[in-house]
Length: 288
Image 1 (cartoon, rainbow, N blue to C red):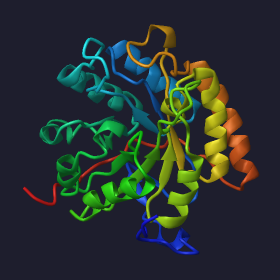
Image 2 (image 1 turned 90 degrees about the vertical axis):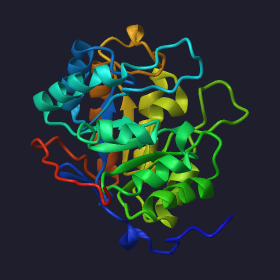
Image 3 (image 1 turned 135 degrees about the vertical axis):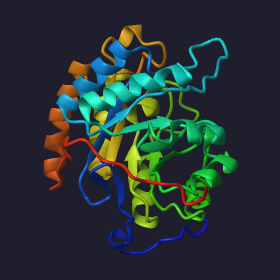
Image 4 (image 1 turned 60 degrees about the vertical axis):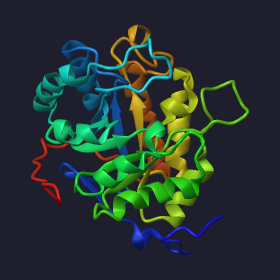
């Protein structure tokens, strides 16, 4: 394996904390991101946001644009989701992360998102990564479903070399020969990235397994492995979700999972970051 910058026997001092709103990822505590795969309506997104916030999530996720394997499936609301997001953020005070699929979208959603998400399919989209490097907005970089760890880290370097070191790596499962689950969660990569890179690392157990009944167990395993957090798909009515309904948790299941998760974290002398007051953002692009 190629040498990874930041490799050291003691990497904890090298971790670059990532500030999102008024909380920080990468300082030993555990962060929960949660929300629906896709924003479908104000009623759906508001219910999901309030539910996950009550259960202990501090970061709201939701797709405005969705890259789907089939061109005939729901692709997201796009620009029609902007006002929905603004309203729900005002109601909850939760910072918001959403996937960006094209460099041209940055200006459109810059004032809406508090963290850009680069999805698995775009991990190799170097034009997008370079552009995101010119901003101080945090970036959640998902691992490509067939990417080596070195390729994942090199993708992060495309962002950091532009001047933006506010990067969180996300392991979301990789494609293997196994077909009983959607993907295979690579906890090896989580532990390795934690020890050999300066970036916080979170896990997406929803995409990793694709089966809602198995999501909690993978979340617990991720916490035990030392991940800095999880990002979970939660829907008020999972069976009616327009995308990824098989892996979406109900609000009630998410709340039950969060209670157990705190017990797992306590066994490792770690704590769950709890929701706080609405954040204030003043970032500006490094370039015009």
